[in-house]
Image 1 (tube, rainbow, N blue to C red):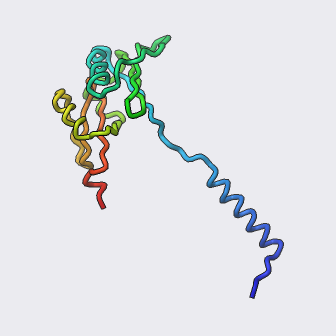
Image 2: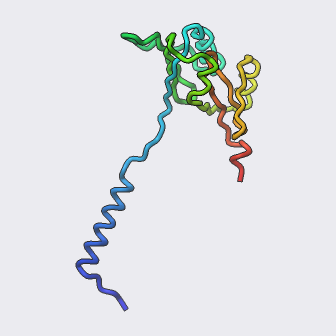
Image 3: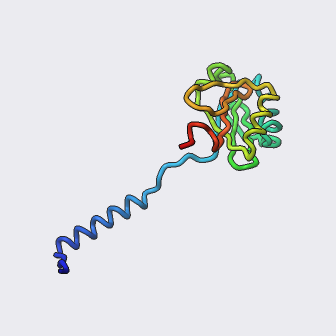
Length: 155
C-alpha cells in the first residue's frame, strides 16, 4: 500500500533536504601548500643553499619587506608548494625552533631525498610516535619526508 504524504510531512522533508544541502555546501577547512617561518640571520646562507640545492627549489625569490620585518626569501618546490623565510634576530634559536610546527615534504623519491639529507649532514630528529624521517634545516626548523610505505599506515 502506498502511503500518502501530508503537507506537514512534505514540508518537513523539504526542510530536511535543504538543511542537508546547506551542510554539504559549506566549505570545509583545508591547509594550503604554503608555509612561512622565522630564522635567525646567521642561518641565511646555509638555509638558502639547503632549499635551493638540496631540496631542489632553485634560487629564492626576495619578497618585499617593510617596517620591522627582516629580509624575506621564498622558495617554490618543484612538485608544488612554497615556503618563505623571514630572517630576524627575534627568531627562535636552532634548538627552540624544533618545538615549533613541523612540516612535511612529499618528494617523488623519498629514499633519494633521505639519502641526500644524510649526505648533507643535516641533523636527524627522532619522534617515537612515527617512523617518518625528520630532519632539521639550518636554523632548526623540522621537516619530515612523507611516504606512503610508513609502517604505521599499513593495515
